[in-house]
Length: 178
Image 1 (cartoon, rainbow, N blue to C red):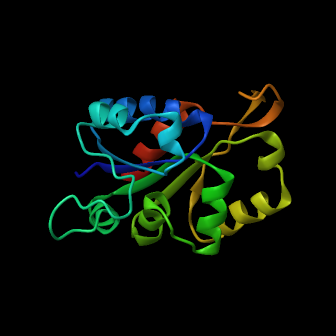
Image 2: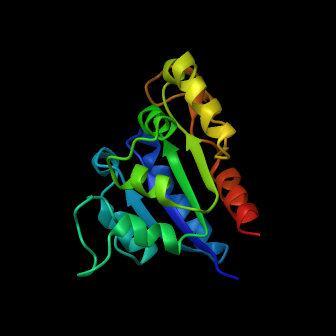
């Protein structure tokens, strides 16, 4: 059975936790390829994910892996599941609106496999009505959503918005692969 996972990483402080997602998915027998938003590259260097995954990271829309392929299309065809962890309010809004202007969103709108998002953001952002409407819209479209945790956030606030437990993300991805 194929176990190809494309992991989208967006610009949240929780981006560093995506490194553990890569490793734990590999421990479950998955091959992982990573796409990153430009903002995510400010939190974790693509080289980190390349080293962990053993594959080049796609972060620029116009980088070409070969003379003929477009990365977001090739990755979308390769994937058995696409997970975005962390998923920021920005990327959630773009997906809900059908916008595709970076590797993460272009890949998400191209895949024909299950899509899973794990939101991570400040509690004020997460509880904002527009963000909640966007999440509801994505759920209605069949996107799986792993709710964030409550607790103390990186900014010092307390509330819901912390990235879900890595074990929960990984077990959900593995279940989608079955």
